[in-house]
Amino acid sequence: MIDDSQTTAVAGKRVMVIDDNADIRNLISLILTSESYEVLVVESGIELLEKIAHFSPDLLLLDIMMPHMSGFEVLESVRSLPDAHLSSIPIVMITAKSLDVDVDRALMLGANSYIVKPFRADALKEKVSAQLSQGARGR
Image (cartoon, rainbow, N blue to C red; front, side, top):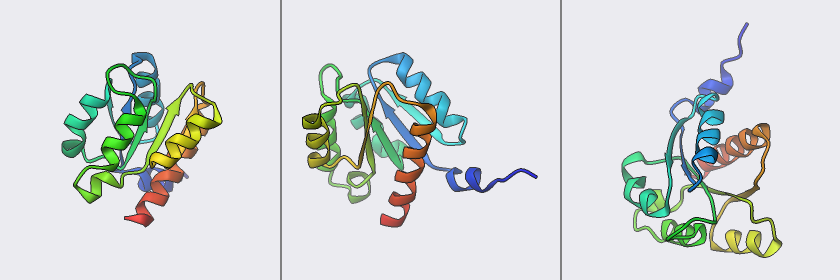
């Protein structure tokens, strides 16, 4: 017998992936869609801010090192959105920046969690599931 509890728990959950690297966006999308999440990938913070209200994600996976607008700037922008639902979306930073100063800055600016690249698929799935479970209780 197949256990549908995992699929049922994530059915309808939307994750937005923001990374300027197409390979990383595609990899994350593949991992998450295989877990039945609805995924929207965008390549910049500007594109995220243009699409966030329409897509209404349940979680953001956000790179730090991007051109034009860093992940820190995007994080600050999302947290200052006037829409309380959008400004409180759980945000997981997913980046190659592994220094404590970067982790601390992200958490201080309002990130909910942090994943260092390269990452394992199972670790990503666990982090996403945990954040969505916490986000569901918090909203």
